[in-house]
Amino acid sequence: MPSWLAHGSLLILVGGLLAAGFGVPLPEDPILLAAGALAHRGSNLALPSTFASVYVAAIIADCGLYWLSRIFGEALFSHRPIKWLATDSRRARARVFLQQHGPQAIFWGRHVAGLRSLLFVLAGTERMPFRIFLLFDMLAAMISVPVVFGLGYFFSAHLQRVEEGLARAEHWLLLLAGVLLTAGIVLWRIRGNPIPACFESGTADRDD
Image (cartoon, rainbow, N blue to C red; front, side, top):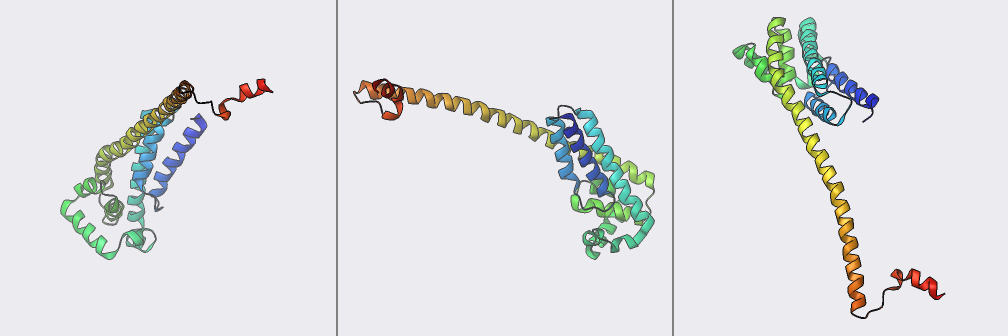
């Protein structure tokens, strides 16, 4: 993969993660999967730097949601897509979960796609101390981000092996087809049958 294309793709993925922190409805997990696949296929991208880029971007996105909700408060729930995500029943259940578990709710909730953003918004509106939010979010991301990123890397590696295996299989199949065709012609002649005209182009030219 050309370096400009690999780095450009990474910038798009990082930009997607950052945009999610400002309310753009972009799910995190598919972006992390794509980043893992890019790290495997992009020879000009080092694995550690690619992972570090998306990890930091994911944390910044989480902090963006936290601060937006802390600054605008309950008014944020009247804007899309938060309005679609945070229905009254979901908000009530998430608020109870946050009140029961405190900062640990951020840790556990980060692993649940449908609950993650809502908990981050509630953490801001409920004015959870930012240092506490950041600590538990970073601890949770140390699990969720490597797992999803690693799945993208792992399956991309296996997909490439499958593609390489199919390419080798095609060569062997062509060779086998040639051997079978040659053997069929030899057996045809041994039994005294004439060679079909399509295989006698050279003989036909000499007769002319």
